[in-house]
Image (cartoon, rainbow, N blue to C red; front, side, top):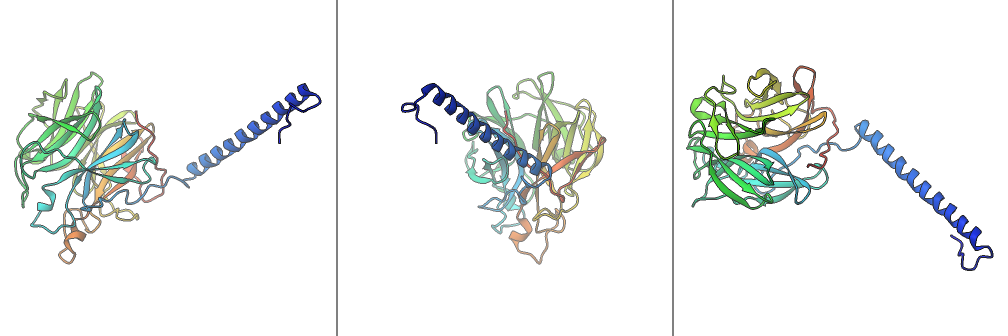
Length: 361
């Protein structure tokens, strides 16, 4: 207990004594806190904390979360995930559970350890019950910009004219419809956007009219787009392109329905085809049979890929007649690290890895 200098026989000596006691207490507290910090740092380096949840997220209403995109919410100061909401627990004709889908929202306040369902966005701009797939969200010039695939109505079989529609928002909740993009055809889905060093934007997307390949267009203002004649990625059909920068290269992942294909580029124009990631099942819960259509976040020398799986299937596109509709169609969101080996990207999700989403900008 500190001495009261009001009744001390030597007030000056009493004051000095109290100062020394305060210094002792403060120094001890700082040492204690430093010790805790060093202990946590050692635990993190040893992989003993911040284990990634697996699955990372399941939609609590329809159990069909797919096509995730990650965005930093500047107002709430937390990471949000927007995703396609398939109605996996509602038996329907053929593939109609994949139509009439809304865009769902989940958020985390503990840097990715737990995710909370927040609701579904109201993006309808014309009458009826319509279809929204695969959102892409970027922040530019004080606004969030969403580019989402849109098909009118609900269909029982694959098909229908599809376009990418542009929305803007100040808060990620309330969206203003800016209209459809004029791109290479009327069978367009799955946008990914990247801002180049010269200030222009590029959008890559799947064009089903050309056999399901990746086309590319360019814009100065996110409103008017000029389509390049040559495809960015040709060859066999694929979807869900994702472009990002990491370890001194530009990368594109495309969904081949048996994992994601890796492409590398020096200039965002010419792409070198490499191997697959997420093509094999892992030992984690629901992380099987392969990873599909996702997003990537890069934090310095770390990169995380967010993707969805069909854990009730033995292969991504094949259902089992001996299983229920729900078992065949439910999807989960997973996360895994991307590893650069000096030449290409690989995933390593069966082994423990340190998962932490630092605050965005």
